[in-house]
Amino acid sequence: MNRGLRRLVGSGKPAIVYAPLRHTLSSGGKRLRALLVLLGCNAVGGTDANALSAAVAVECLHNFTLIHDDVMDRSPVRRGRPTVHAKWNDAVAVLAGDQLMSLGYQVLLGAGRNGKNGLGVERILTVYTHAYRDVCEGQGFDLEFEGRRAVTMREYRKMIDLKTARVIAAAAEIGALAGGGKPAEVRSLRAYGRRLGLAFQIRDDELDVTGNQEEFGKKIGGDIARGKKTYLLVKAMEKARGKDAALLRKVAAGRGARLVAQARSVYERTGAIDAARREIAKLTRGAKSALRTLPASPGKAILMDIADRLADRTA
Ligand code: IPE
Ligand code: IPE
Ligand code: MG
Ligand code: MG
Ligand code: MG
Image (cartoon, rainbow, N blue to C red; front, side, top):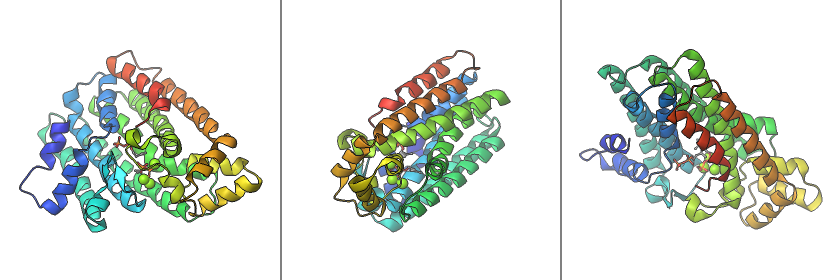
C-alpha cells in the first residue's frame, strides 16, 4: 500500500508538483479509507491483491481532498506538519491536489488493464467518480455555510454526508466490488461506510474543540475561528439562550478566533458535546448492524472493531 503510493511520486518528475505530494503521502495519516477498501474486500471473501490498487486510488482521492481542504480552510498544520499551501503556496496546493486525482484514476485504469486487479473495474470507476463529485459538492456546502449565520441540523447532515461519508462509503463499497462481493454484500458495506463516515465527521468536529493538537495533528479551534458550521455549533445554537446565544452568533459569523475557550464552555453547558457523543454511538451501532448478514471473517471483525473504537479516536 505505502509502496504503491511511493512509486507514484518517485524522482525524475517536476519537483514543484511531486515534492508536495511526497510531503503529503509520506506524512502518513491513518490510511482509514485504504484500510476500508482492503477490509471490505476481505469481508466478501476477496484477497488483498484484488484490492490493493483500488486502496491506493482511494487514498489518492482522500489526500487530494485534504490538500485542497487546507487551502479552503486556511489550515496551517495537518498530521503534525505544515500543510502544502503553508509550506509552498496556494497555486502549488491546487496543482498538487489536481495531480493526485489524476494519479488516482491512472492507478484504477492500470488495474483494469492488467486484468489481475480488474474485477469490476468499470463499476469501481463509477463509485470512485461519484465519490469525487460528492466530496466537491459537500465542500461546496461547507464553504457556503461558512458565510451563513446559521444552518439547520438537516443541512449540516447533508453537508457531512457529501463531504465525508460518501468517500468512506465508497471505500468500503469499492473493496467489496474488488473482492467480487454479491450485490447485497456490496450494499451492506456501503451502508456501513456511510454511517461510519457520518460518525467520523462528527467526531472530527468534536476533536476540533476537545482534542489535543499533538495527537490530532491539526490546529485546535480552527473550525471556531472560521465560523464553520460544525455539529457542536449547530446543536448548541439550537439550545443556547441569552449570553450564550450571543457568543455563538459571533462564532457563527466567523468572529470567534479569540473565543475558543468560551465556545467550548457553551458547547459543554448546552449539552452539545454530549449530544455529539450520543449521535456517534447511534451511528456506529447502525454501521455495525449493516454488517449483520455478512458471514464471519477477519475483515468483518476488524470493521466491527473500527466502529466500536471510533467514538474514542484521538487522531
Ligand atoms: C480528515 O480525515 C478529513 C475528514 C474527513 C475529517 P482523516 O482524519 O482520516 O485524515 P488522515 O488521513 O488520517 O490524516
Ligand atoms: C473534512 O472536513 C472534509 C474533507 C476533507 C473533504 P474538515 O475541514 O473538517 O477536515 P479537517 O478537519 O480539516 O481534516
Ligand atoms: Mg479542514
Ligand atoms: Mg473543511
Ligand atoms: Mg475538521
